Image (cartoon, rainbow, N blue to C red; front, side):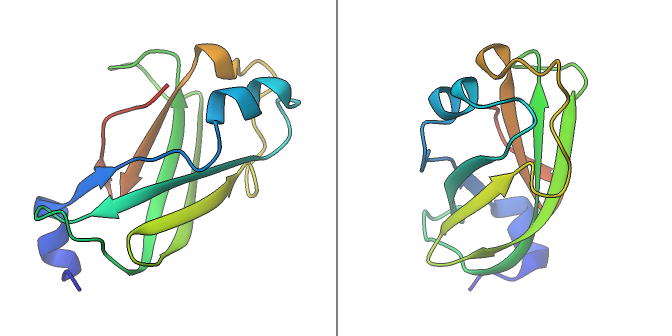
Length: 116
């Protein structure tokens, strides 16, 4: 297991869609929930495990800009894999267009590249 203090500097977050986010989200009412999942590995490509704070944010642009929605959840990561229900704690804004948004994920405060 990677120590949290070392993880911040070495963590590589490999996102793998558990559900087709754009397809699921665009068909759903913007106020509904979206199932999303991914994979977390350390710098050597080894899956991590434990409970970590993950922050999910939707942006209108792939780089820069301000988040239009953000939610933080403490997530159980098992052998590098996690699944969450976005919108569980904080409703999506009615004007959020999932087809034109990018999802950013940060683990323990370290942001990773956004995905469409």
